[in-house]
Every structure is written in structure tokens, then in C-alpha cells.
Amino acid sequence: MKRWWRARTLHDRLSLLVTGAVAAAVLLVSGGAWLTVREIQEGKVSAELLADAGTIAENPAQWLATQSTRKGPDPGPGHKEIGPCWQIIDETGAVIGGSATPLPVTDTAAAIAAGGNEETQEVVTLGPGDYLMLTVPVDGGGAVQVALDQDPDKRVLALFAALLAVGCAAGIAGAALLGRTVSRAGLAPVDRLTEAVEDVAVTMDLTRPIDVAGDDEIARLGRSVNAMLTAIDASRSAQRALVEDAGHELRTPLTSIRTNVELLLAVERQPELAHRLPPEERAQLLHDLDAQVRELTTLTTELVELSREEGSRETIEQVDLAEVVTAAINRVSLRAPGLTFDTELSPLTVLGRPGELERMAVNILDNAAKWSPPGGTVRTRLHADGPGGARLTVADNGPGIAASDLPHVFDRFYRSTAARATPGSGLGLAIVAQTAAQHGGAVSARANRPHGTVVTVRLPATPAG
Image (tube, rainbow, N blue to C red; front, side, top):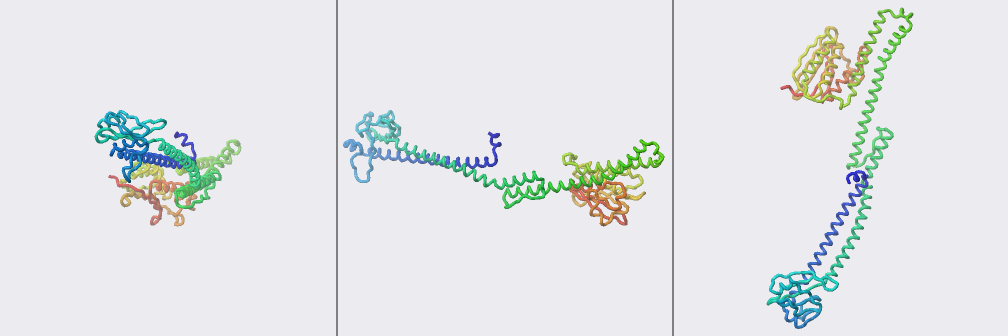
């Protein structure tokens, strides 16, 4: 059943639900009406029998004297007509008078005539029909029996049931038609939204929003789809920009590597040209190749870091930020032995990914070390930044960053005029900004006095206890 239901379209489901709801309501009301009419009829018959029996039991001798087949003597104005079947029995159960149609004296009726005090109703068969018979005791002994034919009431109930059945069938058919109409009208916005999304899937045009009108749930869904399309378009644009920028940045080292390799291969193939490449120039060429390969490796690593998906990242955990920064300083100090690293770190705990946080700190320190003069000092400070915050600052005494370049230093592949002559990919500080944002923080850069640059990272943290 579940599989069949799931295979139905939303139109079919809504139509079936509307039809089922209306059908259940119609059947419930019809069944209640039929039962109510039956109870009313049964109550009316019982009341009529009781009234007839009471009339006869008040003066049974007078009714015996007349032996009327239809009714007894006229005791006076206000008395009702008696039903067609009645009789009076004595204490022994013998019939002593009544209408032309005799009634059966059942064991229950005989017991009442013999002195029973409770009246009783029974269904008896007289000829082709069923009668409802009432037996009531008479003062002084005996009993009165009165019966009415049930067939007319049954025919009325059967006719009423047939009419109700026809009405139910018509109502259910109308409900099915109405349900189909309601489903089409109610789901028309969904159909339009589906067509618009399918059109986007075919054309791949994410810049054209879906038309949305109103404030209902469908309109909210349409606005959500538009927001999703905008986010996808922005992501695709960012991805395209990343690929284009990466291709541009990769072209330079690859071209240089290819030129140098072709020169070396030409010398290897034609030994007579060896005199044109002295040993010192060959060594310099190999040194350049090594530097270019290293630069290419760094660029590739940083590209992978920037494009890493959420599912491939580290698990978030409690991290001692002071330990992470200390490990980063130890790594960078090995690459810059001529510099002094002035460190002042307070124990602070952050919720994050230790590897990414260390890479962030390494990139900041590498940038400071690259621009520091020989014998310079890189100052690193880690302190609480108000309640529930951590502030990491790294300051160098290099040439600093021009004011016009400060707003762009954290952009991908951005390199200032002064930086273009030095090795680098332009991605290091972009990774810093991305990591800080992913950990709920922010990064900024400003000029150091009298010269140099200060990079500040603020993260949500809790002082270590």
C-alpha cells in the first residue's frame, strides 16, 4: 500500500485525500441519519403500542363486550383509534377476546398473564409479515396483547437507505471531481515552480530568477529557490574566478619551467652547444628550476586548501591556541634563522580544527618573515580579547603595505606591486581570512609604527582554566 501511494503523483494524492475526506463525511452523516430515522420510527411504534395496550387495559370488559375488529367502544372524546391486532388473554393464557386476527400467546405472554408485572415486546410472524407485539398485564389477572405490522416501516427505511445510497454516490463522485479541480488549482503554483526549475536545469541560466507572487508557502518556496540559485551562481562564479586566477598564476612558473627544461634538453641532445651553457649558468638554471618547482608546489597546496570541501576537513575540537601558535613559530623559525621571534602567548582555548588553525598561523608568520629585513624581529602576541574572545597579532618591521593595498591583501591571488618581484602565490593571506571566517572570527591588517605591518586575528575563545 505504501509503495502504491508513493507511486502516485501529488495531484493524485491530493485528489484522493479530498475524495476520501468527503466520502467519509457523507457516509458518516448518511449512516447517522438512517440510524436516527430508525430510532424515531421504533420509538413511535413502541409509543403507539403502549398507548393502545393502556387504553384496552383500563377497561378490558367493555372491549370484550364489543369484540370490535378495528376499535373498541367510544369511551368518549379524546380517545384514540386502536391498531388492527389486539386480544385479551386470561390468567391461563387462553384468548378471551380480541380482533379478527389472532395473536400468538408466547411463553413470555403467558407468564405475564399469570401474574407477571413487566410488559414485554416481541417480534412475531403473522401471515407474510412481521409484527411487533406488546404484552402488558391487566389488573386482576390476565394480559392485553397489541401488535403492529413492521413491513411499512421497513419499506420506508429501505427507501430512505436507497435514497441515501444514491446521495452518497453522487456526493462521492462530486467530491472526486472537486478534488481533481482543487488539486489542479492548488498545485498550479507548484507546477509553475517545477517548470521554472526544470527550465533552469536545462538552460543552466542561474541569473534569471523565478517569478514569485504572494506570501503563501509556495511563494516562500519560490523565494528559497531564488536564494539557492543566487548562492549557486555566486559559488560557480567564485569557482570560475578561482580556476581562471589559478590558471593565470600557474602559467608563469610552468612557462619558465618549460623554457629551462627545453634548454637543458637541447644541450643534452647537442653536446656541441655545451660551451654556450657554462657550469655556473647550468647550476643557476637548476637552482631556478628548483625554486620554480617549489613555488608551483606551494601554489598547488594552497589551491587545494582553498577548495577543500567541508566533508574532507578535520573534526572540530577544543584546541589550545597558544600551543598551535607555538608550533607554527617553531616551523617558521627553522625557515628564517636570521630573524628574532618575540613571543608572548596567553593560554586560550578555542573550538576549531587544529591543523587549519596552525596553517593560518604559519601563513601569517611566513608573510611577516618574508618581509622582515635580515636581523629583524617578528613580534607575536596572543591575549584575551574581551570576555569570550582571543586576539592574535603578528607584527613585523618590514617595508609595510601601502594604504591602497590594505583593503585587498586578503583577496585571492592579490599581490601588490612590491610583492610581484618576490616568490609567492597570493593565496597565503586569503587562506588566513578563510580559516578565520570558518572559525567564527575575522582578520585585519594595519600599518606598524614606525614601519612594518600588523596582522590581527580575532576568534571566539574561552580563557583556559
